Amino acid sequence: MLSRTADHLFWMARYMERAENTARMLDVNYQTSLLPQSTDMAEQGWRGLLSISELTWNFSQKYQDVGARNVMEFMVRDESNSSSIVACLRAARENARAVRGALTTEVWETQNQTWLEYNRMLKDGAFERDPGSFFEWVKFRSHLSRGVTVGTMLQDEALHFLRIGTFLERADNTARLLDVKFQALAGGDYFGPGASKEGMEVDFYHWSAILRSVSGFEIYRKVYRNVIHPEKVAELLILRPDMPRSLAACMNETMANLVLVANEQSSETLRRAGRLKADLRYGRIDEILATGLHAYLTQFLDRVGDLGVGISRDFLVPMAA
Image (cartoon, rainbow, N blue to C red):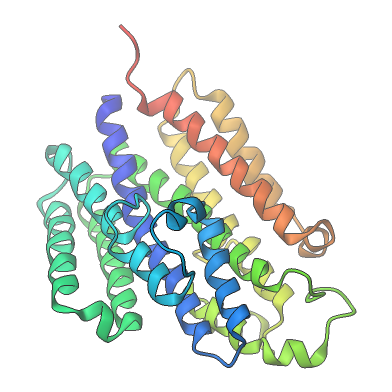
């Protein structure tokens, strides 16, 4: 496969997944902002979202007040923000258009219709009327895109690059989503033996929102069958390979598809992906929390970023003549 074609497929999948995960991060912050809390705590949550998305400086150039309305406006419809949902959906559609011949009709029509419908909904005021339903629509369209891709495309290199893009982006965003919550709790002993029982009970609703944002509430109940504990939420979203959006599950899928497209120059990238997969497979949540969840997630994001650079170098960047 031509590296330019692989590049478009890879980024089409990444941008679609990024749009969904941006909607998920916004949704969890929006839902938790509706719970009883101080103004400072609510603002801290929105600042945390901008910080982990590396958009604090960009946001400050356009807005002074870090509140729900401004942050959601910036992340939903601001085309100058390359990480906004509108920018991601536009980029996904443009990448799909560039490799129209490598996609099935159903995949292209899904991408195109999502872009057209999203703009219509913005103009009709659907976002302002009900942000929660709006974010659910974005997530549904991403689900539809993945389903149509897997259900209609030939299982060749084109599909493998789409899957690599999807799961690499999902790993990155799941780590960021979990870190947003941790940042909001920074300064409190929420994982150690000194954790406040009252604080844990109050925070039950915040962790419930986290789980629902990754479609994990029912999964948590099925796996752990008890009240929600932060350390168990972290374990589910990091180490459980049977949880579809966990870091372990994402790296398993990424590695499986990388093996299928491996070439002579990708051995180092495969080694790094395999090591990251192994660390998650044999990791223990008590060791991760002892090290520090924020430090662990920051290191994970750095490693995923390096893996993305390696994939681009080995597969996606056109070779010099």
